[in-house]
Image 1 (cartoon, helix red, strand yellow):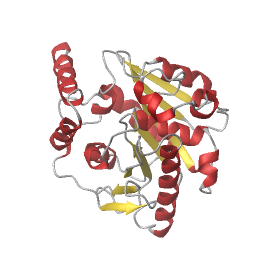
Image 2 (cartoon, rainbow, N blue to C red):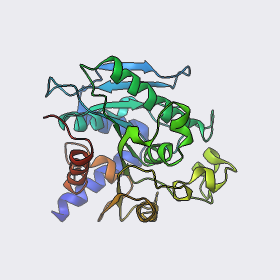
Image 3 (cartoon, rainbow, N blue to C red):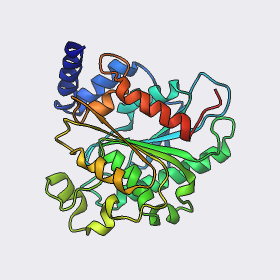
Image 4 (cartoon, one colour):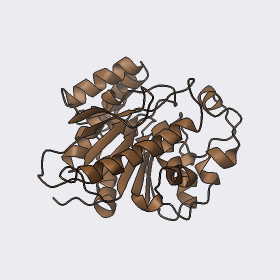
Length: 285
């Protein structure tokens, strides 16, 4: 078991420390030719404000929706490289929307959070117009790293959802993998560039009034040196309904690659994710 864990960690490091092209290779290895059912739907005017929708094939019933926000320090990312995430959730019976969003340095905070809100509102409208594909239930938000921050902050500060005609009751829950929620002062270049001189009271989920928050599942690796586990720990102590899972011998990328299907699959991540979804956004299957 320890040898298998070492091999998986070595693969994770090779994939993610070598850059985005390796992420494409990882995605290809895990998902093959898995493609969205509806690609490049525009939820805004910018070229980056587009999303893909993946529908489960296992059921003829309309599916509940997960919206996945990927990481990348708010300055990089490509929705096409996360088909393996969509495939994983599709196999559990969920539809998945993966939005691209505007990136630093073209924009700065809070533009990427505004994009998250716009994508959520767009998908709520899309579900209403396509009841044969999606249920009109509250949606589940999920993300890794900077994407986990986006998923949490768009709800933690209610002004973003309010601006698009929504509120926290439209969100069934949030799954945050290795997310930064308590990173002020901005002491690394990624946060310095993305947030500038934004005060903590506007940017940090842990500084918000969290009494309105939906259920949270916060998963972190105990060996994460990119986003320290204290981020998830502190948010879990402040949110009214939060489950905190700490995965031993796992670094920053490991909570994401755990969603894969070969070599990196980790039930220590998958089991709580599946249980959280079953409780807070059950399928009809």
